[in-house]
Image (cartoon, rainbow, N blue to C red; front, side, top):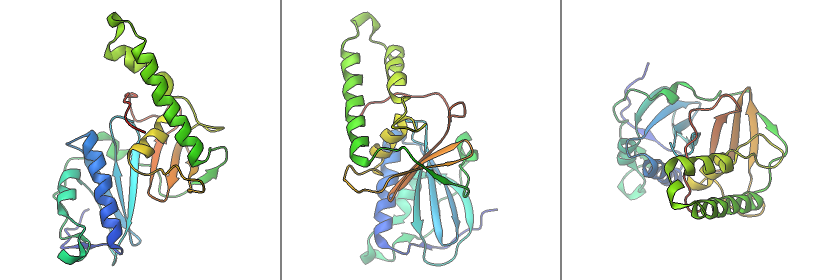
Length: 231
């Protein structure tokens, strides 16, 4: 059961700005996006699902004070309620937005524990190189289509072929890396910490700025959508 909150203060003002950027990116892909919030142990976890990638995106924020709740709210209303300017008061929320009916994915969250790190994931620079090559390949194959076949269905087939490929010696599909890059989680710098973890059928790409989670082969979140943006 959700307990109404009068305020929610973050431990670090910079995390409010990072959360605002994350919510803004989610809203770029879906203006009606919802997010599920889970608070406990001094941490707020924010779950979203950018529809273009068919993955779950997770951003965590350290809280000042103890809170324990689980609620789904509008991403847009949460962004509007965020205070990211310390001059205007403590970084955080003056109040949570009203709860909304959760979308189907909100009932399919990854487990909180039991994660184990797996080998075989390329480093951040190699991941960026692979992404750049994938975007170039999509555009080249799309441009080569004859006019009669330049349809959404044909583009979906090309995208499915490219973004379902796995990276390195892992089962992680390239679309998860694309999502991490597009949501601001990934940095193409040598030494930037990235890791692949698994828990049961779940895969999780973890970085200091957030995580991308999805179920492994045969346990996806839905039909693979196709987008090509900047990398």
